[in-house]
Image (cartoon, rainbow, N blue to C red):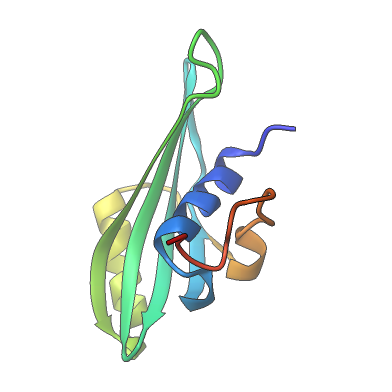
Length: 125
């Protein structure tokens, strides 16, 4: 069974950010055009006394010769005090410029169970 774009993105995020520090995830409606699907999530991470906001994106070829090709990026787009979540999320959404609001997903349900040999509790060293 092939993992969804969201599952694969969550695993990619878990390689960069410790899932135990992620306190919120919002996903935007994936976009499909021709042979590709694109998805974007906003991830909030508590890092000591600071909150860090990231955008995580994927591109997945769903048809054609490159079917299954998967690309991701995780980029920090904001940081601030812990209580600044609403403002940081608003700024992140403005940068993404999507007309549909994101859906909040509990982090513990967003991060999938890892296949054997893949850790989801933080980067492999």
